[in-house]
Amino acid sequence: MPPAGKKPTLPPAGKKPAGLPGRKPAGPGGGKKPSLPMGAGGDGAPAGLTRKDFATDQDVRWCPGCGDYAILATMQRLMPELGVPREKTVFVSGIGCSSRFPYYMNTYGLHSIHGRAPAIATGLKASRPDLDVWIVTGDGDALSIGGNHLIHLLRRNVNVQLLLFNNQIYGLTKGQYSPTSEQGKVTKSTPYGSVDHPFFPVPLALGADATFVARTMDRDPKHMQAMMRRAHDHQGAAFLEIYQNCNIFNDGAFFEFTERNTKAHSAIFLEHGKPLVYDNGQRGLRLKSFALESIDLSTGKWSVDDCLVYDEGSIELANIVSRMSWQKDLPRPFGVFFREDRPSYDELVQRQIDDVTVRRGEGDLAALLNAGNTWEI
Ligand SMILES: Cc1ncc(C[n+]2csc(CCOP(=O)(O)OP(=O)(O)O)c2C)c(N)n1
Ligand code: SF4
Ligand SMILES: [Mg+2]
Image 1: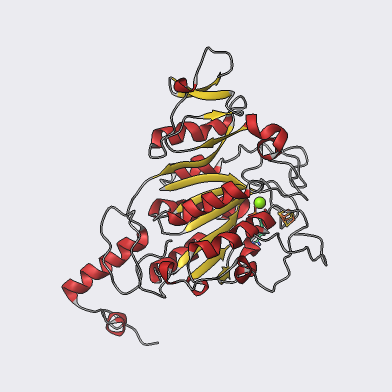
Image 2: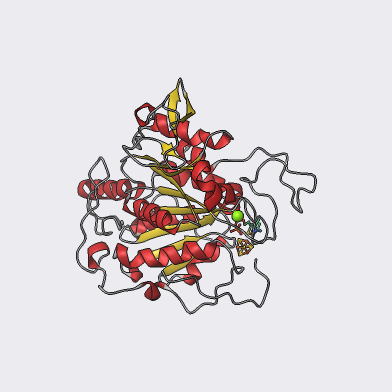
């Protein structure tokens, strides 16, 4: 956590609500945003809200310079554009610096239990599908104590957006290594270097059958906003990893990919239907057997036509490209790795309730509780 007593300045200015709880059967196939009545979210948002309407009167308790500010500012700028009323928007977080996010959003929010934001958000979305639910979590919160809950949220395809602020460290508890810290990381809890093999969140999300998987960075607000919007537009669990600088306990963890002097040749931006080109058009990636190879486009030997054209609907490509994170000689990918349509958990729950109600009539909870064997104590 930031040094006590500091009041950093406010950050610079800057879905998909599914069907209402009213038992609307959800059709198979997913991918379609149900239209809502005015006032129910989406098209019902009051016009004229600005970024300031989404800021709160709370003192922001992040360290000055923390990457969390840029993420907050980007979200506050995006919110009016999404057009979802504040009272229909909920931010659910776990525990960590990142998880303080709901205090700073003028919407509903739950600063919940360590690692359990996905479980709480699942219950919320299943019982109130009209709400637009965002999860904010950190690499420790989501992948250590909450690893189990994360993978089940993704495989179930709960219709929420999950933002994983990855700073490769436990910030709140003052700098212990996390599941995304690199091997050999020296921290107070690993004074001789961590021996753990790290997780890469993107391949993990793909392995859990997430239907939307993307990565962005705190230092590129334009890209970050575009990815947040894509996550929001997706019907189903949208997983967005955000590289976030913790300037106190892990400063510069991602500078190679985010800073002007190295970004062009260290980062590549995936775009559906476009060739994989980076380094200001000087280099590209081609598929060689089951792996990617970096090719020099400046010598005349190779051209853009030799580069792989990205297809975000291909799980095979997504798996190959996500594994590039392990290869030092290849750039780090950002953008949407994968997207597919699949009915969401909350849709299926509602559909099942509808089906059973048609066949058996409205349920009677009191009768259910008193059915079968009961005991008086
Ligand atoms: C049950 C429980 N175990 C451990 C902790 C201590 N703890 C608080 S936050 C945290 C990790 C936070 O790391 P991360 O999720 O990466 O968030 P960051 O602070 O880096 O944003 C830990 C271990 C706790 N609060 N509760
Ligand atoms: S993530 Fe790091 S820089 Fe940000 S508030 Fe926490 S300790 Fe401070
Ligand atoms: Mg962290």
